[in-house]
Amino acid sequence: MIAKEESLNINENTVRTKENTLYLPIKQIYFDEILAGTKKQEFREIKHTTYKRYLSIWTEKGESGIVFDDELLSEEDFDKYGYDPFIYNNGVYPYIPKRYEYLNFVVGYNKDRDTMVVKVEDITFIAAKDEEGVIRFNNDGDDDKDGDFALWLVVYHLGEVVEKDLKKDR
Image (cartoon, rainbow, N blue to C red; front, side):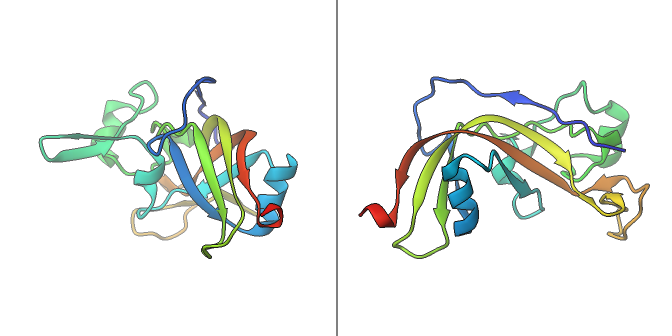
């Protein structure tokens, strides 16, 4: 089954701040493709260690959870799976992305490196696939093509480069 992509449109006239900009280290080859305009999407895997970077989180009175669209996740499934970021949900990702307006790409981890800021046009989710289809698994972590959970990717649809600092230009 092909995962449906859920969309979040981004405001065109937002001022860049630390809160609305996601910092992402990438390899030089991908940096160059983005700068040239040939790479139009950046994919990041949602993991237990990273989902709070990519998904909207609510907090209240010491409790927290992932913000979801209640039209995309039934009360029955919520009761069964809670706030699990890997829920397959019939191939429809029910969670709301953290609203980033910009991506700050940096090449590697050295101090002297190429950097650029790119406008985010849209944010969607897709279920990751391998040669056998959507990567699904059970609660015990074992692969199962009919499992209740899936490996999900957040997809940042890239717009214009709004700022760049290249080593070759210094």
